[in-house]
Length: 257
Image (tube, rainbow, N blue to C red; front, side, top):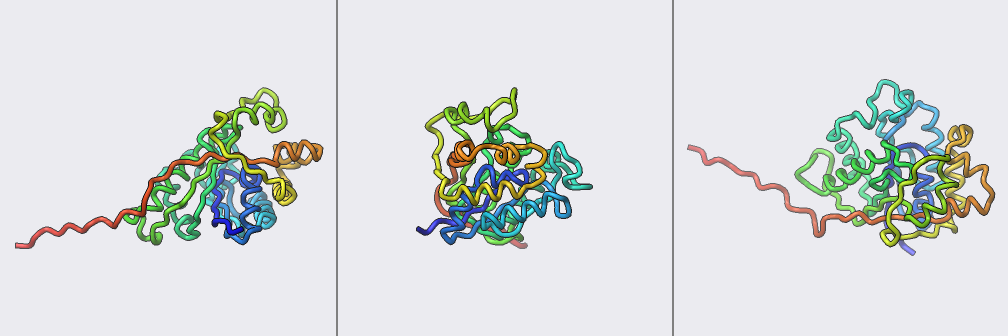
Protein backbone atom coordinates (compact mmCIF):
# COMPACT_ATOMS: atom_id res chain seq x y z
CA UNK A 1 0.00 0.00 0.00
CA UNK A 2 1.37 3.40 -0.97
CA UNK A 3 1.47 5.87 1.89
CA UNK A 4 2.24 9.62 1.89
CA UNK A 5 5.56 11.22 2.82
CA UNK A 6 5.57 12.43 6.44
CA UNK A 7 7.52 15.07 8.35
CA UNK A 8 7.38 14.91 12.14
CA UNK A 9 7.97 18.08 14.15
CA UNK A 10 8.56 17.49 17.85
CA UNK A 11 10.00 19.37 20.80
CA UNK A 12 12.62 17.00 22.22
CA UNK A 13 14.58 13.93 21.20
CA UNK A 14 12.39 10.90 22.08
CA UNK A 15 9.08 12.72 21.45
CA UNK A 16 9.09 11.47 17.86
CA UNK A 17 9.40 7.84 18.95
CA UNK A 18 6.95 8.02 21.85
CA UNK A 19 4.25 10.06 20.12
CA UNK A 20 4.44 8.93 16.49
CA UNK A 21 7.05 6.19 16.19
CA UNK A 22 4.50 3.70 14.91
CA UNK A 23 3.17 6.03 12.23
CA UNK A 24 6.67 6.95 11.07
CA UNK A 25 7.75 3.30 10.97
CA UNK A 26 4.58 2.32 9.10
CA UNK A 27 5.11 4.91 6.38
CA UNK A 28 8.82 4.18 6.02
CA UNK A 29 8.11 0.45 5.70
CA UNK A 30 5.70 1.22 2.86
CA UNK A 31 8.37 3.15 0.98
CA UNK A 32 7.32 6.69 1.89
CA UNK A 33 9.88 9.37 2.69
CA UNK A 34 9.88 10.23 6.40
CA UNK A 35 11.89 12.72 8.45
CA UNK A 36 11.80 14.44 11.84
CA UNK A 37 12.54 18.03 12.88
CA UNK A 38 13.45 18.39 16.55
CA UNK A 39 13.06 21.86 18.05
CA UNK A 40 15.41 21.56 21.04
CA UNK A 41 18.84 20.12 21.76
CA UNK A 42 21.82 20.75 19.52
CA UNK A 43 24.47 18.83 17.63
CA UNK A 44 27.37 17.92 19.92
CA UNK A 45 25.16 17.18 22.92
CA UNK A 46 24.70 13.63 24.20
CA UNK A 47 21.12 13.34 23.00
CA UNK A 48 21.91 14.11 19.34
CA UNK A 49 23.50 10.68 18.62
CA UNK A 50 20.69 9.00 20.54
CA UNK A 51 18.22 10.76 18.26
CA UNK A 52 20.20 9.64 15.21
CA UNK A 53 19.98 6.01 16.34
CA UNK A 54 16.24 6.33 17.02
CA UNK A 55 15.56 7.82 13.60
CA UNK A 56 17.59 5.06 11.97
CA UNK A 57 15.33 2.51 13.69
CA UNK A 58 12.27 4.32 12.32
CA UNK A 59 13.71 4.80 8.83
CA UNK A 60 13.42 8.58 9.20
CA UNK A 61 16.82 9.75 7.99
CA UNK A 62 19.25 12.02 9.81
CA UNK A 63 18.31 14.42 12.63
CA UNK A 64 17.08 17.87 11.65
CA UNK A 65 17.79 20.04 14.69
CA UNK A 66 16.49 23.59 15.05
CA UNK A 67 19.03 23.92 17.87
CA UNK A 68 17.08 25.74 20.58
CA UNK A 69 17.41 25.01 24.28
CA UNK A 70 15.00 22.88 26.29
CA UNK A 71 12.96 25.03 28.70
CA UNK A 72 14.51 23.30 31.73
CA UNK A 73 17.92 22.15 30.42
CA UNK A 74 20.23 25.03 29.37
CA UNK A 75 23.03 22.61 28.46
CA UNK A 76 20.78 21.14 25.76
CA UNK A 77 21.96 23.92 23.43
CA UNK A 78 24.85 25.87 24.97
CA UNK A 79 24.68 29.56 24.14
CA UNK A 80 21.37 29.27 22.29
CA UNK A 81 18.02 30.74 23.25
CA UNK A 82 15.36 28.59 24.82
CA UNK A 83 12.62 27.57 22.41
CA UNK A 84 10.17 29.45 24.64
CA UNK A 85 12.17 32.67 24.35
CA UNK A 86 13.13 32.77 20.68
CA UNK A 87 11.11 35.22 18.53
CA UNK A 88 8.31 33.22 16.93
CA UNK A 89 9.04 34.70 13.50
CA UNK A 90 12.57 33.31 13.63
CA UNK A 91 11.42 29.83 14.61
CA UNK A 92 8.65 29.79 12.00
CA UNK A 93 11.08 30.80 9.28
CA UNK A 94 13.44 27.97 10.23
CA UNK A 95 10.66 25.42 10.09
CA UNK A 96 9.32 26.78 6.79
CA UNK A 97 12.78 26.12 5.36
CA UNK A 98 12.50 22.49 6.50
CA UNK A 99 8.99 22.13 5.10
CA UNK A 100 9.90 23.55 1.70
CA UNK A 101 13.08 21.52 1.57
CA UNK A 102 11.46 18.19 2.42
CA UNK A 103 8.01 18.89 0.88
CA UNK A 104 5.93 16.43 2.93
CA UNK A 105 2.37 15.43 2.20
CA UNK A 106 1.58 14.96 5.89
CA UNK A 107 2.99 16.68 8.98
CA UNK A 108 2.61 15.30 12.52
CA UNK A 109 3.29 17.21 15.74
CA UNK A 110 2.06 17.68 19.32
CA UNK A 111 -1.54 18.61 20.08
CA UNK A 112 -2.46 22.01 21.53
CA UNK A 113 -2.08 20.73 25.11
CA UNK A 114 1.42 19.54 24.31
CA UNK A 115 0.38 15.92 24.72
CA UNK A 116 -0.59 14.19 27.93
CA UNK A 117 2.19 15.89 29.93
CA UNK A 118 1.36 19.44 28.80
CA UNK A 119 5.08 20.30 28.56
CA UNK A 120 5.53 23.99 27.57
CA UNK A 121 8.07 23.08 24.87
CA UNK A 122 5.50 20.72 23.36
CA UNK A 123 2.85 23.44 23.33
CA UNK A 124 5.22 25.92 21.71
CA UNK A 125 6.20 23.35 19.08
CA UNK A 126 2.51 22.85 18.29
CA UNK A 127 2.04 26.60 17.77
CA UNK A 128 5.19 26.85 15.70
CA UNK A 129 4.19 23.95 13.47
CA UNK A 130 0.66 25.19 12.81
CA UNK A 131 1.98 28.62 11.81
CA UNK A 132 4.81 27.21 9.70
CA UNK A 133 2.50 24.84 7.79
CA UNK A 134 0.28 27.81 6.94
CA UNK A 135 3.21 30.06 6.04
CA UNK A 136 4.93 27.42 3.89
CA UNK A 137 1.88 27.36 1.57
CA UNK A 138 2.03 31.09 0.85
CA UNK A 139 4.32 32.11 -2.04
CA UNK A 140 4.57 35.67 -0.76
CA UNK A 141 6.14 34.58 2.53
CA UNK A 142 9.86 33.72 2.63
CA UNK A 143 10.21 33.33 -1.17
CA UNK A 144 13.97 32.94 -0.71
CA UNK A 145 13.32 29.58 1.00
CA UNK A 146 11.86 27.93 -2.09
CA UNK A 147 8.50 27.39 -3.68
CA UNK A 148 5.36 27.03 -1.57
CA UNK A 149 4.30 23.62 -0.33
CA UNK A 150 0.77 22.77 0.74
CA UNK A 151 0.48 19.97 3.28
CA UNK A 152 -2.48 17.64 2.74
CA UNK A 153 -2.86 16.61 6.37
CA UNK A 154 -1.68 18.04 9.70
CA UNK A 155 -1.94 15.44 12.45
CA UNK A 156 -1.74 16.16 16.18
CA UNK A 157 -0.50 13.33 18.40
CA UNK A 158 -2.83 13.09 21.41
CA UNK A 159 -4.76 10.82 23.78
CA UNK A 160 -8.57 10.67 24.04
CA UNK A 161 -10.14 10.89 27.49
CA UNK A 162 -10.95 7.18 27.79
CA UNK A 163 -7.46 6.01 26.85
CA UNK A 164 -5.98 8.71 29.04
CA UNK A 165 -7.78 7.45 32.13
CA UNK A 166 -6.46 3.95 31.47
CA UNK A 167 -2.92 4.89 30.51
CA UNK A 168 -2.07 7.92 32.64
CA UNK A 169 -1.05 5.77 35.66
CA UNK A 170 1.44 3.99 33.38
CA UNK A 171 2.65 6.98 31.38
CA UNK A 172 2.85 9.72 34.03
CA UNK A 173 4.48 10.02 37.40
CA UNK A 174 2.07 10.05 40.37
CA UNK A 175 0.32 13.35 40.96
CA UNK A 176 0.78 14.68 37.42
CA UNK A 177 -2.19 16.11 35.51
CA UNK A 178 -3.06 14.21 32.35
CA UNK A 179 -4.13 16.38 29.40
CA UNK A 180 -6.48 14.58 27.03
CA UNK A 181 -9.07 15.46 24.40
CA UNK A 182 -12.73 14.38 24.13
CA UNK A 183 -13.49 10.88 22.95
CA UNK A 184 -14.71 10.96 19.37
CA UNK A 185 -12.31 13.73 18.29
CA UNK A 186 -9.43 11.37 17.52
CA UNK A 187 -8.47 8.67 15.06
CA UNK A 188 -6.81 5.56 16.52
CA UNK A 189 -3.92 3.94 14.69
CA UNK A 190 -3.04 0.36 15.62
CA UNK A 191 0.76 0.32 15.41
CA UNK A 192 1.23 -3.18 16.84
CA UNK A 193 2.77 -4.43 13.55
CA UNK A 194 5.51 -1.81 14.02
CA UNK A 195 5.70 -1.93 17.81
CA UNK A 196 9.08 -3.68 17.92
CA UNK A 197 10.57 -0.99 15.69
CA UNK A 198 8.92 1.78 17.70
CA UNK A 199 10.22 0.42 21.01
CA UNK A 200 13.72 0.02 19.58
CA UNK A 201 13.61 3.72 18.68
CA UNK A 202 12.35 4.66 22.15
CA UNK A 203 15.10 2.64 23.83
CA UNK A 204 17.74 4.25 21.58
CA UNK A 205 17.25 7.32 23.79
CA UNK A 206 19.50 5.66 26.32
CA UNK A 207 19.97 8.61 28.67
CA UNK A 208 16.19 8.90 29.10
CA UNK A 209 15.95 5.17 29.80
CA UNK A 210 18.68 5.42 32.44
CA UNK A 211 17.18 8.42 34.25
CA UNK A 212 13.77 6.76 34.55
CA UNK A 213 11.83 9.04 32.21
CA UNK A 214 9.04 7.53 30.09
CA UNK A 215 11.47 5.52 27.91
CA UNK A 216 12.79 4.00 31.15
CA UNK A 217 9.31 3.15 32.39
CA UNK A 218 8.59 1.47 29.06
CA UNK A 219 11.84 -0.48 29.32
CA UNK A 220 10.90 -1.71 32.80
CA UNK A 221 7.31 -2.61 31.88
CA UNK A 222 6.05 -6.07 31.05
CA UNK A 223 5.47 -6.93 27.38
CA UNK A 224 1.71 -6.66 27.95
CA UNK A 225 2.00 -3.20 29.50
CA UNK A 226 4.36 -2.08 26.75
CA UNK A 227 1.75 -3.05 24.19
CA UNK A 228 -0.92 -1.12 26.12
CA UNK A 229 1.31 1.95 26.49
CA UNK A 230 2.67 2.11 22.96
CA UNK A 231 0.68 -0.18 20.66
CA UNK A 232 -1.95 2.41 19.71
CA UNK A 233 -1.44 6.01 18.64
CA UNK A 234 -4.18 8.62 18.50
CA UNK A 235 -4.33 11.67 16.25
CA UNK A 236 -6.48 14.72 15.71
CA UNK A 237 -6.70 16.28 12.26
CA UNK A 238 -5.99 20.00 12.38
CA UNK A 239 -8.05 21.95 9.81
CA UNK A 240 -6.09 23.31 6.87
CA UNK A 241 -7.01 25.99 4.32
CA UNK A 242 -8.80 24.46 1.34
CA UNK A 243 -7.82 24.82 -2.27
CA UNK A 244 -4.59 25.50 -4.08
CA UNK A 245 -1.99 28.06 -3.01
CA UNK A 246 -3.01 31.63 -3.85
CA UNK A 247 -1.27 33.42 -6.72
CA UNK A 248 1.72 35.61 -5.94
CA UNK A 249 0.96 39.21 -5.04
CA UNK A 250 0.48 41.58 -7.96
CA UNK A 251 3.24 44.13 -8.34
CA UNK A 252 1.78 47.64 -8.32
CA UNK A 253 3.67 50.19 -10.36
CA UNK A 254 3.28 53.94 -9.95
CA UNK A 255 2.88 55.72 -13.31
CA UNK A 256 5.92 57.78 -14.18
CA UNK A 257 5.69 61.43 -15.06
